[in-house]
Length: 110
Image (cartoon, rainbow, N blue to C red; front, side):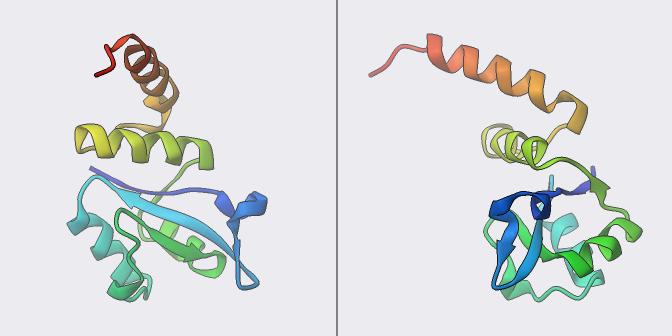
């Protein structure tokens, strides 16, 4: 199991109130909240399945063990977590997402 942090701050969407932000995600809430606490994030800042991390805390997260991933990988890994209950590995994210999309398109619609 692992905690991951993306590079959303590099994209136009990664800015909030003048801060550059990243997403912090994990397979389990226990792991997610534990690392968030280590880097000084308040529990009330939890966004349901992730934390939005200001850029100055991103380095702290990586030093505390978070694995750096891309914004795109993060999106696919969050989707996988909603469906399977786990993020999977960053290097599997694109293949998993493509397979999931392919099956979703073939599934009969009610």
